[in-house]
Length: 71
Image (cartoon, rainbow, N blue to C red; front, side, top):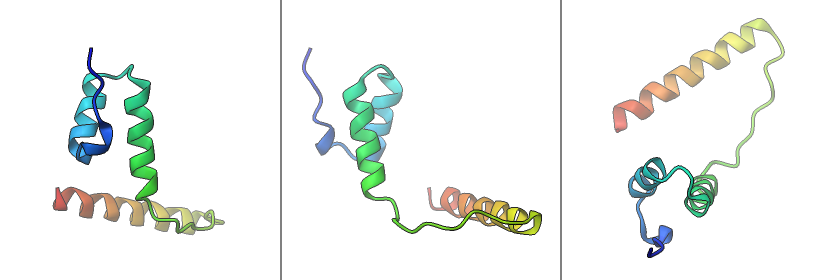
């Protein structure tokens, strides 16, 4: 069997390949490497109160909605 070149795949192709081949560890590591290398290095402190937790949940929900609109 010929190995796939994960570096030449688009994100969508790599994701689809991984879904079709869930036991391919090389594909999994390529997927994780690709997405973590493009992730924002910005970190945020943990919420310290119920109000901060609710605000964080709302911000996450808004971000997910924005991401779904773009795709």
